[in-house]
Amino acid sequence: MIRDLVFEKIEDHSFPYYRKGYAATVKSGDIHIGSLGKIDAGVLKNFGLKQDAFVFDFSFTAIQTLIPKSVTAGQLPKFPAISRDITIIVNRSVTAGSVLSRMEAFSGKEPLIESLFLFDAFEGAPLSEGKKSLSFRIIYRSGEKTLKRKKYSKDS
Image 1 (cartoon, one colour):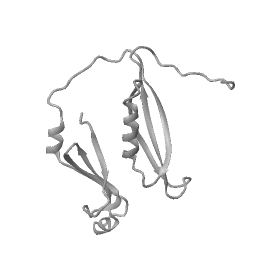
Image 2: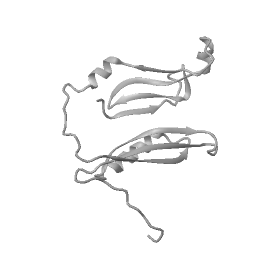
Image 3: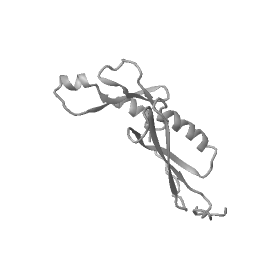
Image 4: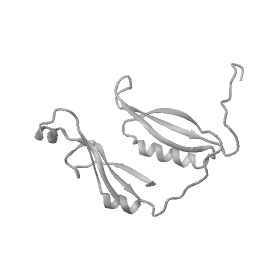
């Protein structure tokens, strides 16, 4: 498994075949893996394409250098995991990566959080202009017991 992947939004025209604002470079540490994004409308027209197209361009050599030389295995968890989804509404300019990195910084201090990841990003109606929603799944697990949902009464 390749760890510590970072997706950085491409803000300039260094990749002219991508639609501005809809592309990213992919890195792991100082190693540039590649790029991905939505193809620019002018490029689509040049190729006679009438629908949106997306492309990724990754360096297989770079990926090979990041694959661990040996695989390790651990003991399977004794207790089941539970997951919760959270959706937040943010300004369109806020990147999902910046929110995720802040959540990961917090999750490192919370022993019950096993992992978290972005599973959906949405823009458009019914959201206000300039807003987007980001949905994250948080996986919780205890090494000592089965986690249970706490029931709340109206009086609590």
